Amino acid sequence: AISQSSEPQESWYQLLVGIYLEGDRLKPAADLLQKMLGLFPRNKAYWQQYAAVLMQLGRYREATAVLALAAEKAVLKQPGLIRLARLYLHQDMPLNAAELLAREMAAGRIDKDKNNLGLLADAWLLAREHDKALVVLDQLSAIDKSGEADLRAGSLLMEQEQWLAAARKLQQGLERQANPAVTDWMRLGAVYVRLNDVEKARAAFKKVLAKAKLSRDRQQAERWLAYLSEQ
Image (cartoon, rainbow, N blue to C red; front, side, top):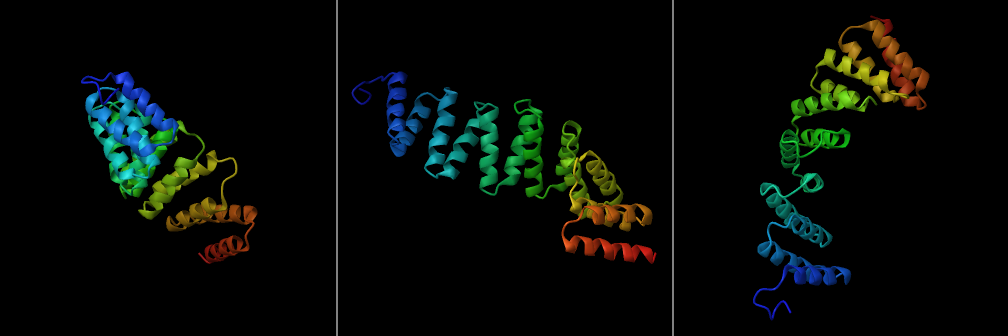
């Protein structure tokens, strides 16, 4: 009916693409959805449906391009924008993902909730935009009291040799954690060594001794405590 009609109805296309998808005929479904986008570009569902079929076919770059164009046309809602960000990350394009998420959060089209802020922090970190990641981790810390964001920020601040800020973040994260990891106590002790705060460093390493199950952790803490006893 579509090929024989000069002006086929949109519902006919919808029926045919449904038949293709029900029969798992992904290639003709993708070809038809591409045509439908040209004929009915205002239908937001087709953009995501086309991208989803391309992903099923393993054509991730094409799916990314489709969703990126849809984002430019402002036809994507939050789930589609998040999907696009994840596609960027899947293809080692973290800067694209971070900029998309930041822009859409600023515009109010993506919620600044725990999951989305966590995804944005990951994207900035993968893009090696550490200062921007720290800003997002601060935002995440304000709404997520688990301590995870604080510990991640503390570890990142250690890499930047911002020892005082790292100590504050690690301490806050440890206080918020119900059962802090031994490695986080070890990091805090190392930071206090850098700050020449012997008593706080010693207290942190004693926490490691009390909680450590692995002999290498205990041995490392004992070496630090031996070093501190000489100071």
